[in-house]
Amino acid sequence: MPFSSLKKRISDRNYSTSFGQVVKINATVVTATGLKVSISDMVKIVSNDKNQETMGMVTEIDGETFFITPFSFVEGFCSGDKVFLDQTGLNIPVGDSLLGRVVDPFMRPIDGKGVINTSKLAPIIKSPIAAMKRGMIDEVFSVGVKSIDGLLTCGKGQKLGIFAGSGVGKSTLMGMIVRGSDAPIKVVALIGERGREVPEFIEKNLGGNLENTVIVVATSDDSPLMRKYGAFAAMSVAEFFKDQGLDVLFIMDSVTRFAMAQREIGLALGEPPTSKGYPPSSLTLLPQLMERAGKEEGKGSITAFFTVLIEGDDMSDPIADQSRSILDGHIVLSRELTDFGIYPPIHILNSASRVMNDIISPEHFRAVIKFRRLYTLLKENEVLIRIGAYAKGSDYELDEAINKKEEMERFMSQGSTFQSPFDEGLEILLKLMAPASL
Image 1 (cartoon, helix red, strand yellow):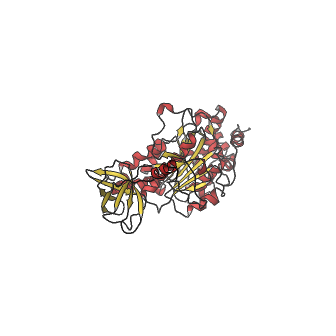
Image 2 (image 1 turned 90 degrees about the vertical axis):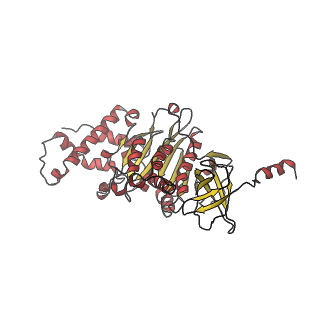
């Protein structure tokens, strides 16, 4: 056997005999001793009796004792099992071969399409883009949804939140954005959702088309650590393509499940609960993920949409409130609009894009302001109009709003399979908001 081949085989294996030992286990944390470790080190727990193993992360150290949060469930492990330090660290394989595939947070395929061959490793945890290296957001990013492109225009490198209660249409809107956007690369992170929703999202919302798309999945039955780092792993994949100078669409569903995973980890480690039981680490974790999206000088951009589940349609929810303060805009979905048959049910008056004014034309901006004003007048006087108490001719602007009500609602509505080019949607908006003829 050639010496170089033998050397490679030896280097690929870990012959170290250093190992620690499990001294205590509960449902979420494994306590061990006997190894010199650091916070965030990756370890492998190997059962002595049942020939099983699992990966975990060191999340707390107390003297010679360290605490491991496992990536899977701990049934079958016991005191005395061995703990080995994993020298590769918290890295995942990335590459062009991920496109068109459905993977778990470790980039292992779960779509039954065979092995993914990648040669490059990328760290899951990275620092966000440095403030002075961020590029100016000065280009429109079209998503193919009239109401967003026209009234909540987003730019390349912007971070937006989609806020909604359960069953209002987040997944449908996500599918519309993935299909309709003009990004060459799309990364979708499905974090903490039901396993049934994964094939449904691919077949129903994406039409089974995963071209130039990577889907990273950590379902609700995965461990909290898998759900937490599934989001970071998906962002690392997006960063790999951004560093090649590409514009990437990143969509994550949902931030709330991601924060809940950190809540489980934090409470198990003894963190004090704050509002709604979330420990402080749940809130500090959000900017660590969200700020990694954006536009970087000399490289590409990551335009990100993060869905936030609002429990009981309460926008003062701590996760919703914290997310809204970090993001560059928010799209609020209204249950009331679904009752009127308006889909996607985007509540224009409660939604905002913080960079829109910098990337649209003055003519476009005037049309948006007028649309919001007319729609506000309709909402304020809705009861009067319905009971017939408003006399036509009393208010010129309100008369115009009443006359254009159906066309405005038609502009806000769009079929889930229909894609609206940006220029076409803008033309419809400008025509609709043109001065009314006397």
